Image 1: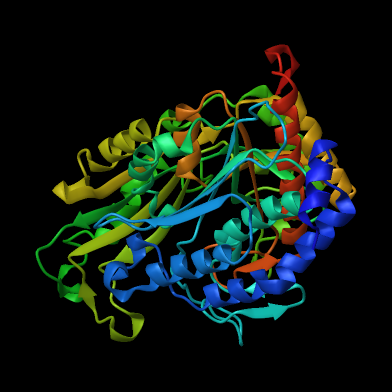
Image 2: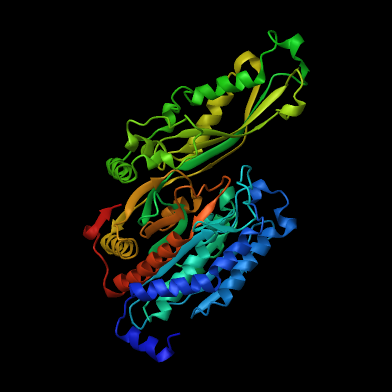
Length: 503
């Protein structure tokens, strides 16, 4: 290691991080424990509370947060304090504070780094030898539920901070927040953020590691996230099931009624959603979509596992496909009830059909407005006097990135060019991170770096989820560079708003 005198001398000379040293430090930290701990993390079935009613009693979430805490505690990061914050009936929060590491009278502020440790349900369809709780390294990928989405986050944050310290490079005060209910819409996070508000402070940089990348060739910066509306559409037409031979032609099928109701919010031929769910797409986002389409080409849709002969909704305009998945509303039916298994499906006209709906909404459309309107449209005057109710309606706001400071733009470019040999690409993500919308409102002056490792074939939420190991190491190196540049930029002088550019 590097001794204290060397580090102090480096700090006094204003040393910045070295690409060679950063890569070497990250490689060593990875080999010395990140990989094995991530594999242990895969083995824990700590499914998010929305999908596991027994999460409080089975102990898996507590086991996962203890695993991460134990790894952090032996990393030797200077100035680190850590605790697991937990309230009755709420998921735990891993809260880490690292004091500034610099030799300057200036106050470079606070960096807030975010991730989550809860997981999506197991799902079916894993390849032979793979499984949600079976960590397997194959062809440079770590397979299993959770590491890429985004269990790696606390490891990346700590490794980046430690890499700065090992090189004697200054970093600002860092606060790391790892929640345990993101996959359930982050219901506990606002409470904890309010509770810990004084300890968090006012960050001037937020780093979120829960996003994705279009390829593994460069760093990707997320400039927008779609919001989400969800609920269960329940359609009842009878009080009990009846003989289908006796009833069909007299009693309408509840599935047909449900289909007709969905047609009110979505055109089943085109997939286009009702006008009230659309927004005007900013011109700069359209330009970014064109750049992404040009960079990825047919990989915009080739990354999805279509069956033979199938393809995307359109192929003539790739930029339009990018906008479809980042700025336009879309519907997916993610579950169904009232349907018996095929093996036991008798000739019965079922009394009801329930459909779990997931509606992705544009980044700037208020989620409460969207879900309220969806509920009104679905429930109004259902055919045949049936009973139609959208149960448990919930919404989460999207997010649109603020103006990008010139120091951060330069830092991102330096990081991506150094570790990938290509400049970074900016794009919107189709998924949701509820925390970002909340932080954007709470800290309007903060800069945001929203990035991640969910790239081609990583298949978050589905079977065969995996993490690209080499790409993840490079992203940790990039975060190291950004932390060092943030400290330098805010220790020198304030940046005038005229030197900011729209992300």
